[in-house]
Image 1 (tube, helix red, strand yellow):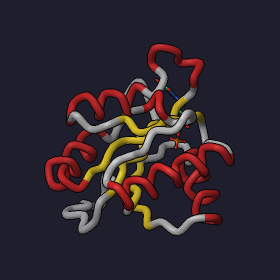
Image 2: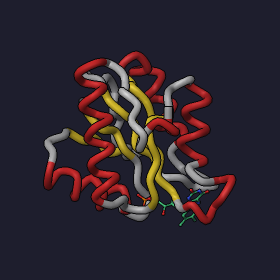
Image 3: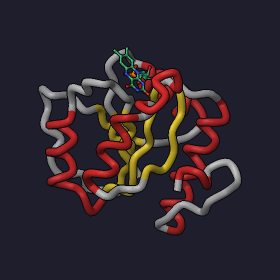
Length: 139
Ligand SMILES: Cc1cc2nc3c(=O)[nH]c(=O)nc-3n(C[C@H](O)[C@H](O)[C@H](O)COP(=O)(O)O)c2cc1C
């Protein structure tokens, strides 16, 4: 499993740095100057939310090439945005009928690391997420 991610102000990068201190995962950053092409593995998309998210075209390219390998979306954001909380992840999830697996604020915390790892382990083992009390509202 890989994590394909976008970041504008590096909160997602900080989350992934903390995540990688405890779990092994390969990550690919969405960078408009580099085409990602075919992803030879299952992956999840980790997307921060912006009212004007600048990487929709790149996300479209990735999903046109790799939709079958995309297991779902994890969103990040700021809950103060209320109805727009996790708006980018929600838009991409709806457009491509991909499950919104989980969401967290800013760079996440230890609990978010634990739950994201649980979600990834479930996807690797069972091909789907086994809902728990802590994650069931997302799927
Ligand atoms: C200009 C701006 C707009 C944002 N818009 C939203 C939003 O619409 N919904 C939301 O949930 N969070 C919004 N956020 C919060 C970011 O999604 C959140 O801080 C996220 O952790 C940023 O990740 P990144 O630093 O990896 O880009 C916004 C932040 C900024 C600076």
